Image (cartoon, rainbow, N blue to C red):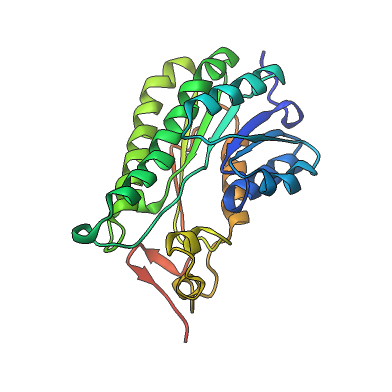
Length: 254
């Protein structure tokens, strides 16, 4: 019988250097999990490395060779039972008519191909475990297109489709496949990066929203989903602040 006690659980979290990824790594370790924190930026991983239970791995998920090296490192350290695909991002708010192919390509590579690379590398390990879990963080942008969001919509729709197909394909291997779809989440980097460093424009996105979600809120949902008994699968979890009733309706106070 497989031991599912939290103190024996191991997860790999991508995009772990900041935001939702860092919050998730921290949240899981507070429950006794061992966490491999994967990110491109070594300097951002340093502070996480100081936390007990976290093993930092420098890896660009869009590079298959780096992913293969990460797999070797995780295997040598005893493996994982849970893969959390969180790495991703948005770039630009251009209309379709003014879309920049280089931005669209970057979003597809980091959101879709990054998830694909990690899944391909770690699926054999998760199958062998017998009760593996793959959780992918997509976005409500995967559910409804919006003006200025087509590139990100396309990437997240793609990641959403990948996750749905994976659930069908891996059920026979007893791999639980979960999708968490956050709405409006105020993190320190996501929107600023999307708006090419325009901090004032990034702050305006959340202006007047009484309680936007924060990274720790999504980490709480992720932790809850992966610590449920293995036979319980939260196929899709849409998480929005109350003020965001839908993608197109946000309550703002003056």
